[in-house]
Image (cartoon, rainbow, N blue to C red):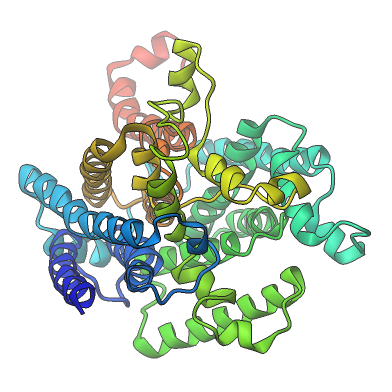
Length: 465
């Protein structure tokens, strides 16, 4: 009863704080912060942590805990800390920046789309076509360098290897440049498709519509090619968010329920086809199948991290920080999620079906720096999230910045339950922001400065049009 009482108090305090710093926790008006609250924390972490603390989870990962009563309590306390202090850090940033979340978020939703320079700019379209071409080439490169493309194996037959093994093979045994694949195929293609969609709506031009259809097909492929179940759902959520932010879709409770039912049916179908699960009981059980995956799979490894590091495994002391930092000190880069998988489920590593046990970001912070890492990491991540949220709501509402906001609104919540080091240095995030921010800046300068230079005659003097 004590755990339940603490859980309810923390839930009330956390919800109030998140409502204030996000501007809205309404499920029909989703935003970056509200998705963090609902997906990363409440559903993926907080509910499961209570059941684990009460010892009623009966989940296969927590069965691996030693001194389970002690670490069930410690893990629950850590999750409660994150639920309260993450939004407190965000509140501090809001006060520092004079950010009125409710007002500024409502204003953003209601404001019209702004063109980039001139939205019929041929220069931007040609730059965009070049990027799209690179994205398509990266998709072809991914297919070429993947030994066995799981989606093709599903269609043509996969022989002796299971689809689960093929998924791991596609991830761990990719023979090409991983960074090139991750940036230009997996990350750039979905983002380009969102931008192309907004331009097709804004301009109603045939060329943008065709480009969107090509990029949409590419984005769907890169999100299903390895048979991972979640990426395609996250991409479709990004598409829905774009439609909401440009005024093409207004959610209602009925629509949310309908989308949820459709998504649930598709998810069950993917479990049947990909995982080979046919036991109806596993779909209805709270600790197996889709439900167990949602409420336990992301948070149970946090308890394992707390249990193993400092006990069975030594603290990493920064070894899982971004490789660009570890290389400076000639230290091998490791990920705590991989170490936990290898320690707890070595048989999966041996048979090729085990990858990493991604979990709440504080787990990796703890694996590196102990409880100090949990405290500092929580405050740091809260500051980063709120600064990004404030910046995007205050930037011009044009197709590029809308798409970047949507991209981060989905990828930051995923990263929160994926690891800590990506918040310290994420080359994909940096490249996308620099790339598209640079394009917008170039076109804005051309639209605002070129006419002034023409009037002065300087462009004519240097034979520049």
